[in-house]
Length: 214
Image 1 (tube, rainbow, N blue to C red):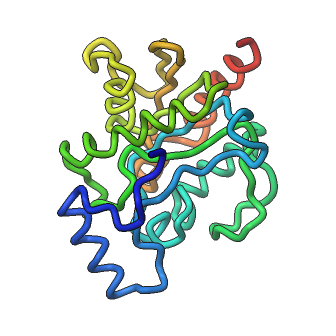
Image 2 (image 1 turned 30 degrees about the vertical axis):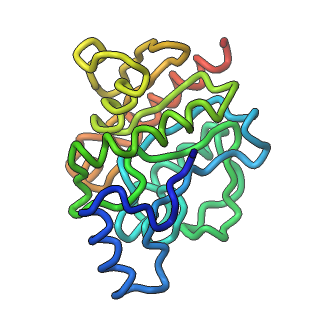
């Protein structure tokens, strides 16, 4: 199964958290967030971006990855600049934004309290990442946003985390994929200067160069 059921019962802590928000905000999505793919179809996808988890007032509210919070503002403006998206990002699922040659998913599909999933929750969601990787037959580049996304991707590919350490703008060849890691495009990272727009765009420069020659 590529995406978990809307009422996935696997992680008790995440279930309790989403049920609380289903009661307080019944008009929100409040469930696992599915992978979002290029309009042209699965065979068009050559880049998979792997985030941490849905933001409480972002994807958990809107039901589309990185939609409705600051992380999406930076991610989608960069994807538009480098040709991995078209249209306009309006921070709502009914805007005109469309993905081109790319797909976006999360290491953990449900919103975690304080945006911090625990190890068991990350492990429970890894099979969905494996199914997502298998879904895209022409996939070559993976972009991992943050250490949790990078480490779970490394484990999903059967590699040792110690052999492929996370670092901003690092490149690792794992199995049939080339993995590009980046600091997460969160407001915290940008506000503190840990991640600048240029630093983020530099990763996309390397991804674009790689895909143009492979």
